Structures are given as structure tokens and as C-alpha cells.
Image (cartoon, rainbow, N blue to C red; front, top):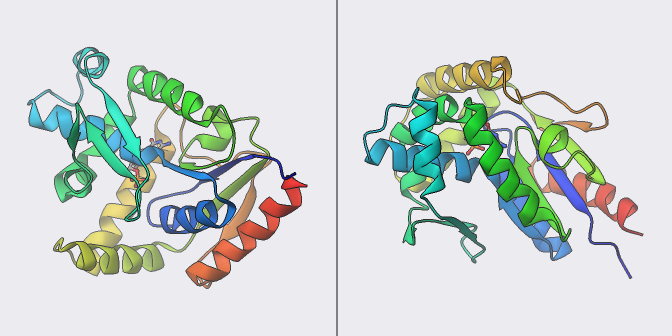
Length: 224
Ligand code: C5P
């Protein structure tokens, strides 16, 4: 029998994590968990309720009164906030521009990290984020840190946005991505950093399928 391992997939915005994680999870019959969607869900609700994003206490009490559910589906992971399907809304430019500020609060991270640990506790998961290998699942059997050049990541986001009907330009996206990388790497609470025991995968010149195959090979070696 093969082991139901935990796979931690970290890296900056647009490195291809979610697309690749989905393929890997599907091939292994594992559950895919997109932790960025949880930070986005909190940001979405805070913006909707007009809560100041630097008010950690207020955000924390809001989150304590909020239910966030992740549901796998054919179109990818669906996200529900207080029972409402917000899977499309959490990808808006407004949420994207503000999510790093919300994710920088230690009080918010503590709550979401507990939820993430619980979701992964039975194993058989591919979890993507920024701090999975370092904080959420430090005992994960396989840790990958995935990156690509800023230009390549912006190009991918542009195509993604076109598909979703979100307007953007390559230049604007390069700026956004570089800024979000900086905020995520420089914050005090669980910054974006490669875990010591993570394998680095540069996807700049890899197709989605090549990157997924590489991870599947590494995963299968850990599952015997
Ligand atoms: O992965 P995605 O781009 O949707 O993540 C949105 C934001 O959520 C990131 O820029 C980061 O600020 C935050 N995040 C985080 N820790 C995670 C996942 C996402 O801080 N594990």
C-alpha cells in the first residue's frame, strides 16, 4: 500500500503552484488545499465589511465569527465564506492588492494555520502557500519550493486573468508581483522563505506538465 503523505508546495505569486498542485493531487488521488484562498477569503470579507486592514484585533474578531470552507470540485477548489460561494470574488484585483496586508497579521495567521493543520492531519494532501514547509506542515514528507522569474510569472498571471475576464497589463502585473513578493518576504510573521529541507524547483523554463511530472516522481519515491 502507498503512504498518504503530506506534500508542501511553497513559493512566490505566479510560480505555477496552484495549477501544478492540482495536477499532482489529481494524479495521486490526494486532496488539494489552496491556503492563499483562505487569506483571500478573510480579505474579501474585511473589505466587504469596511474593516480597516491594519486593525489586527478587529480582523481577528471578524474571523472568529466567520466560517471558511474549502470544497474540491471539477473546476478546482471552491471557497465559501459564511456559506456564500466567493470563489470568483476572492480573485478580484482589489482582494489581490490587499491580501498581503491581511496575511501579515500574526493573529490572523495563527487561526488560519490551525485550520490548515487540521485539514492536512490525515495526510494525502498537496497544500500550497508561502509557509507550508516552514510553519504549517514542518513534518511534511515532501517539501517543494517553486519559483520562476518575475517576468515569466507576470506573463502566466496575464493569461490567467484573461481567462477569468480580469483586465491587466504585463507591466502592471510585474510591478504587483514584485511588490507582493517583497511584502511576503519581508513580513515578520512567517515570511516567505525556502524551508531548509525543501527541494528548489525553478519553473521558468518548465511546462506545467514537466513541473508536475518532476514533483510526482519525487512524491512517488516518498510513498513506497
Ligand atoms: O497564493 P495566492 O497568491 O492566492 O496568495 C495570496 C496571498 O496570501 C499571498 O500573497 C500572501 O500574502 C498570502 N499567503 C500567505 N501564506 C500562505 C498563503 C498565502 O501569507 N500560506
